[in-house]
Image (cartoon, rainbow, N blue to C red; front, side, top):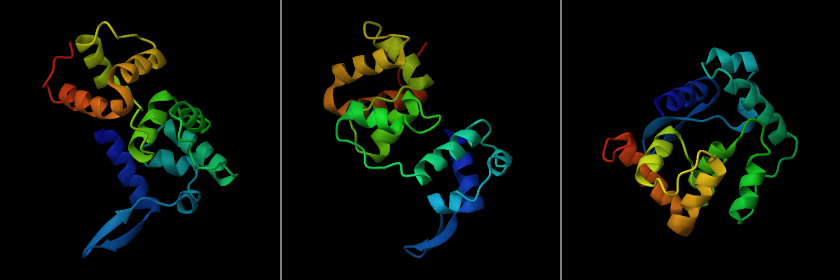
Length: 162
């Protein structure tokens, strides 16, 4: 997460703008229009690495009529999210959980996977989609909240992961 935050901040510094909020100057992440000025090389120079191509290709899709309205159905919304270049299961689940209020979404990163393997061996699968489905079925319609608690507990040594 520190690496993602660093990339986010560098993109905001380079292409975003400063705005005032509640008496403070804040750096706002660039709009699609502002970020469209970036080249793949510009993004690589900011340290985003292989993600530069994904960002550029996704911006092309967004600029060419991709409708950002996501269906209410989780599976349909996830399929739509994955239409963006380079967006896989985890990123789709993160976007759906954190920005689209799809509380059913269960993103699985390294920390979550280790915790699930140790704490829920009967539900564990090495297959992302199967593991995510197992956790959604186990925790129900707000499984995203459970994911956040498990992630936090694993990352901060509250529960054993190995």
